[in-house]
Length: 203
Image (cartoon, rainbow, N blue to C red; front, side, top):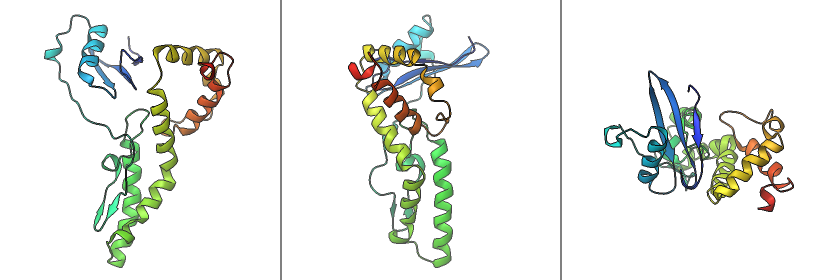
């Protein structure tokens, strides 16, 4: 088909999910994100999607993904931003949007530093205030939501989707879903599902 498919479950990608994205011309991009060693899970996912594929013939890329911003992002004459600073959407592993936003914030700080001729940590620390104000809550909520979801059993996941369908959750989240800003939708989802009879709150 032409639709992107997402795969969840402890046997698929513990703590996260896998995906299949159609590229056209009988080609797909397949991947997964997990807190465990990805190799056996990736082999299993490829076998599930394309049973006759020889995995040794595939181009496979791996990389670590930051879980959250750790420590300070600035020092004398140094600013870490974007993925280097852990500014990653922990719900999806994406970092482009926060990287672009961080670049704009860093630019504002550096323009002031060039004007004053001061590049010490105290001058550059304005970036810390900027990014925490701009998307700090988003990163924090995403991190805790990811940690919570990583403990879900397959039964919890099934219950989550059953409860979401029964409560028309996507309709209830209308106006809260934005592609790069997930924290309002995550909090609303958690509130809705925890209060449902037979929902996640009674698991």
